[in-house]
Amino acid sequence: MTPYYADDTVTLYHGDMRDVLPDLQLQTDCIVTDPPYGLMHTSGTCTWDTWPAGWAAVAATAARSMWCFGTMRTFLDRAAELAAAGWHMSQDVIWSKGSGTGVTADRFRRSHEIVTHWYRGQWRDIHHQTPRVPSTRPPVTRPVVHRTDSIRAGRNDIYTWKPAGTWTDDGTRYALSVITAPNMQGRSIHPTEKPAEVLRPLIEYASPPGGLVLDPFAGSGSTAQAARQLGRRAVLIEVNEAYCERIARRLAQDVLPFGASA
Ligand SMILES: C[S@@+](CC[C@H](N)C(=O)[O-])C[C@H]1O[C@@H](n2cnc3c(N)ncnc32)[C@H](O)[C@@H]1O
Image: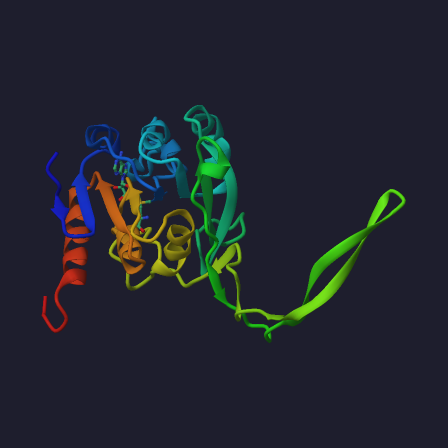
């Protein structure tokens, strides 16, 4: 299949991911994606928000690890479909956006999004590395002791311990499960674009340096841009040609040599 766009790190295909992905026969380190949620489609007027039936099973052929954006309702409604495709949920992360969206007066104004992590097979076989971030707390230092030998006292062993210096933390802590980042209002090229500050920790968690990330619902191509910033490669699929065009322009600008003008 001919890509719509390709450079050293990113390949973009135009089409329905359910047709494109089987053709590619791809194995990737992880999927990071944001499918249409299927929440507004019940009126029959909102075609862009149609949940693509069967996509989770198609995605399962290309990775064993997947971050998927959605709402609690999306995941509750689609739990059986995800499970039938072999996906187990491991955790959820919240993106706290600051300002809210939504116009209904009968609900809280929504200022967060959920992204859930799914895996197939055995958890021990899944690449996962929680990113570390700078700690806001003062560094911690504590004494280190080593066990030397033991004596048998009845049914118990009694150990002796020897001081072995001190341990000081490295000024970092594991990233928290709530990521605060402003939404893309005023700077987006897609109405539901996710910021790189949210995507980067997800990609870092689920793929090794140099690894391959797949986003089969590419939108603005934000996943590829974040992957590239982290030294990963990416494959994108997008059904809407207008967005393919924008993605290609965005990615091409990114790879322009320093000092060149677009
Ligand atoms: C929620 S948006 C993704 C936005 C993206 N996360 C971003 O940061 O820009 C979902 C995208 O999937 C695309 N899409 C919908 N159905 C698709 C399908 N069957 N195959 C490929 N792309 C599809 C839509 O055109 C839309 O751009």
